[in-house]
Image (cartoon, rainbow, N blue to C red):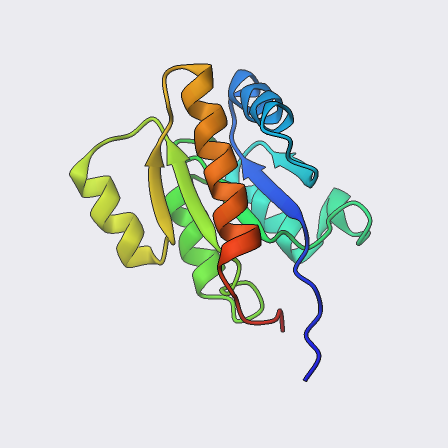
Length: 150
């Protein structure tokens, strides 16, 4: 059986423009050759994944192979967005890594219960962020085998 190749796209959902820029720079520093797409809140994330609004064109919203999800965003936070992603049969297979400043045990437990694949506290220095991004890219795009997209 031939499976479609997984997209080499990371979708970052984070309302902080500085954090989005840092992730972009970290990807460049670690030699990531994939495509980073960004949205600013949970509503935009779901619009992107469902190809609604400004994301109707497949060229504007290629299917991500990984979602990096911040928790505390306006309009719809990461918890709400994750709940909707996992309740949608067409989206639930996309790996979601929570990348947030929270270190609260209650957040960690809730997010795993909601279906997060991983929970990572945002590193405080750039070199650590580069290492996190490098490891995520290697793990999710080179090591693991995931089911084909529906």
